[in-house]
Length: 341
Ligand code: UT7
Image 1: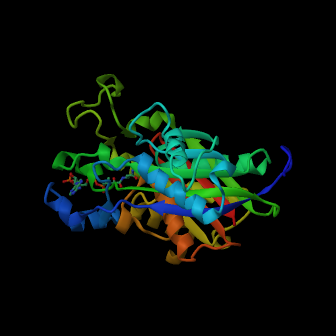
Image 2: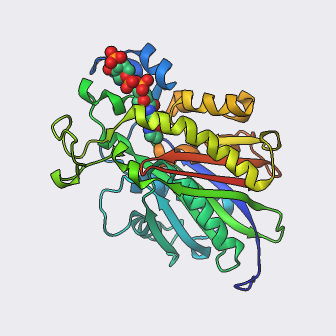
């Protein structure tokens, strides 16, 4: 048993992801709003996205992921120390969805009860990467062993499928993904560098108003109903093109590495043009920066773990690799996590 001050290596013991069955294609969107498949593909790279069925929720998608993480890692619920759920899509603000998930697990005879710590975190699209950094350091310090980090998003509940809502409706999809982190005696494994940042002055670029009081001064309340996301797409785009690349550069520098030393960049699937800009700046070949936005859209906090899960499952990412996770989103926030697996 590690003592509370014994530094440990940290490994990703398992990954898992979940996508709702229902698929919404660009052709489906063309039927309900003034847009076209050509416009969406050229401006974003999205061809289709998965969307939750009426009864499907962050809680249900995340529970599926957590169960898979237990099955694949061999960690038992009673051995779990902490569940971190990154989402902005919970139906209730109290209690945390993370606690509800553990309650659902306790009621399932395959899993049973756990008294692991559990909390939700609201960092929008950067949430999973923030969570991985936090979980890593808790395990590295020796005080915690098994931590599940899950990023789940149900953003389609915050868009309107109409011409006035097309700015966000074309972009977002639903899904969940996660990782089980565990200690290892090999202290070379774990984070080589990380970053968690925000610029709160830019929160008005992307927000979901619940009440009239939530609007920043000067914003037109009447464009969309309350509860529907407002996004200044051009502003977020400009921010992302610069910050995303800077973040990759800064993280490599912290680790004393170059882009060539990294085997895979697992990037938030925000918009294929933003990814292309970063790829070109560092001369990263396409096979080292995988893209699935065409099939899943922008799934916010679920974006990085879904892609990580796919690459893990097909063997593209394997033991011994160096992998950089990178994300940015509402807040505005941005975060990176460079792993030696
Ligand atoms: O996950 C992190 C948070 N979000 C993001 O990463 C989003 C970042 N931003 C973006 O990805 C892009 O800004 C969007 C994809 C949202 C929009 O693309 P854009 O190239 O910035 O388009 P735009 O808003 O500047 O609009 C260009 C034109 C406009 O027409 P005019 O004024 O040039 O005649 C829009 O009215 O395209 C029109 N337009 C559309 N046309 C067809 C805007 N949305 C659509 C649409 N279909 N869905």
